[in-house]
Length: 287
Image (tube, rainbow, N blue to C red; front, side, top):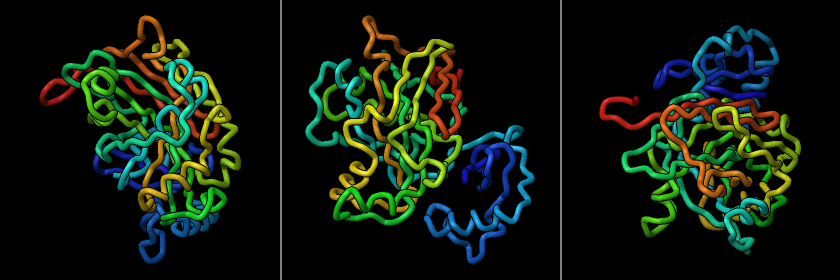
């Protein structure tokens, strides 16, 4: 099953779909106001959807982020072997973690804003893991699947000058508004039986820049959920961005960074696609 939020910004409604084309608005039909960001809530939605009635044309509405506002977005750096190689950095012995604020998250096709002073705005296709059951101090990676609601596409937009050349932690280059397009949907775990066998692709203005597979991950999804739970409690609706493969703009010589008007298209097998244009920041709007 696929879970989406559709409608104008700030007025989205939650929708369930089998095919990603027709959807059923679910809040009004879920008994007891169940939380759709829990595994139990999603099971209730699946039962409702099985009775039919999907009447929302998902091709004719704006698709927002499938999560209104994550409690937290935990990100993993240098988690693909070939990406570590292009960055000329050693394979990490443990996952490298950093955070993105909930306010970076936006719809998969919304405009991404290049911040003032940006010199090296970059892109990163990533598999996002969405948590559906509280996870704290899991005993082993084998427990992780019991806590995963599903998977989505994330573009972990980054400003490399802020991130790497302005001192301090990576967070400076990761947390500008709009820097985490998410969606178009969350695919529940039954749709993605093996998250380590997914193709990822990203193009800029039609030029393919990233083309890889989650099989190249250094630390797999189960390991990451277990690992993160050792340092912070994961709650339903939290997101883990699991890292990006080779081909980022900073991996080219000279670098291939983003400018206003550039269009980035992102896809992961089984998870749909994103298309977002980049624009310069102006007070009161984008240009």
